[in-house]
Length: 79
Image 1 (cartoon, rainbow, N blue to C red):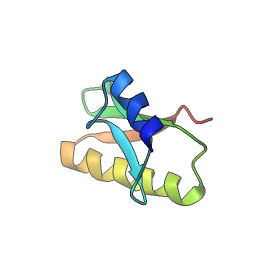
Image 2 (image 1 turned 120 degrees about the horizontal axis):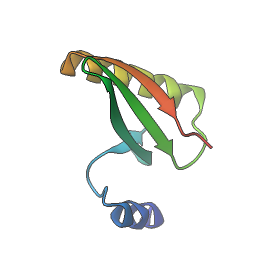
Image 3 (image 1 turned 90 degrees about the vertical axis):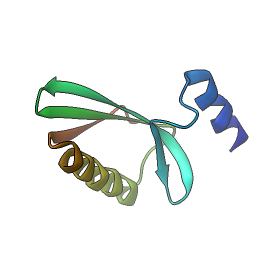
Image 4 (image 1 turned 120 degrees about the vertical axis):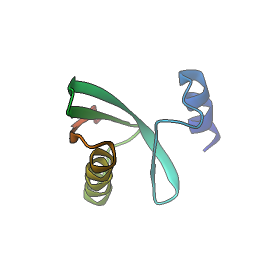
């Protein structure tokens, strides 16, 4: 856990743009505007995501898009 926190601090992501699954920090994310009403959510997990985690982040992306009133798609820089 300490190593992950140090990595986030060095990236400037201490409290924002982090991926949390089952109470653990599992990576970072960022959004990219493709069009005014379409965004890509790029996931950068620290390790390979299992099916449950992938589904959870897909649902989170959909909820985020609904909140922001845009369509979203996930791009995973998965290992």
